Image (cartoon, rainbow, N blue to C red):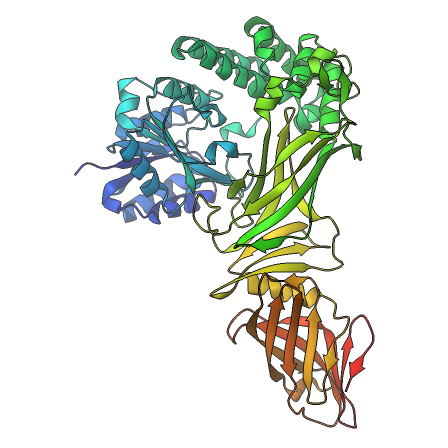
Length: 632
């Protein structure tokens, strides 16, 4: 039976990430008899070749390794991987990275059902930027003419082996820049069917932890880099058939590989001589290959940048880079609520520049970037046009703290420009934890909620705060037939700030929220019944959960703890803890109060900001950390 997939893994001094990479291949749900692992050592000198030999020996018949002299780039190693592959499909995997357990199975399923030449699996990363709009939906049967495939030009995807062979698609060998992009452009141009997996994270870009050398670790040599980029432009001219698609592809390169290196912190950090060389090379390529029709496809910030580049105005480019870096996005929501199992956020957001609201200018033809942001440019260079409308993108991002996986919710968000020229983002967004992961429920864990916006060529993201931040942590709890299930929590005074969503860990975050809350009006009855109203915790319906109050003696630390059965009651008007204190040992004393939600063996208890006292007359009292004591 022929193999379905060959996973090609080139490596050169990979450091400790290699073990995670290989481990992710062992964990694949696709049967071992359906795929193979082809490892290519590109002349490693850190002992990783020996480590891989030992690993391959343990997986004989499933994994192979080829040892090469160093070639100065991954192209030759990947080509040997292609030539050695026995699978119908070839999946490229860098040794720094990892596949998720279902990656091969899901991608192969989509490849076979759609006769795909290329399958692009959803990406996640703990350090690098991902063009997430590409992965909002699972799509099949797409081409470069009808889908924004140019948002992903990394080679770490799945290719049909016969497709690569039929068209002679190979990597350039030797020390090359952007060899990934060269192969992807040719593959996209020739592919009749491309699929994108949007409902499952398939590939993790991982930050290299320690050691190892990477081909991209050193700055580019501008003359070499842009000579190679000009060669890619020649490839685009000869392989991309549609004139409109060809223009869009080239405009993408102009925006990213050319103007992109002249903005942001990198532009400000270059040494003056290097910056001058870089600008000269970018300008030479821009003037010879890109006419006004390409610049018209750019949003306002990049159009202003292009004007400064063509004028060889390096000071202006620096001023624009400094100005853009000073633009911030700030986002808030009214206190969230749960509606039919969905978290509802009423989002308000705006852009600020140097701690003041960003204000656009206006003339008879429309809105403009402020002149002070891009001095030396004409109104036509700074005007918001149809290109800005095409570039506009807004979403509420649900981001995993564990691995950086991101899922987008776009419905309900809008942007307007008020009469004073201030962009205003707003809308009511409903986030359904049961479906937001490409139709599946969010995985257990903590997820950050961030607003992301691309406006006028500027991309920014911001945590979502509250319009009126509470004095302490707060939680808005969703309950269902299984009891406490998830909670939206807001954290102040710690990192990270902002609104978060906790899935199947809500009892932990809820305990922490209650522990941080103030108890302005605790009460204790004559029968020893304690009621602790909890601020900032709300639920859509009345619900209750078992809990335990644990009393730890302060005056006699060895006296033993006392457990009190308790109930956490949550409703739309607030929450409270009810418990009854049993007879306490001794005639007098003080006790710390700890809370555990759920049964013993569940989450660890959290200390509450109250203290229980017993005086010599047998009277119980409660002393909040802030506020007056109460007693019976």
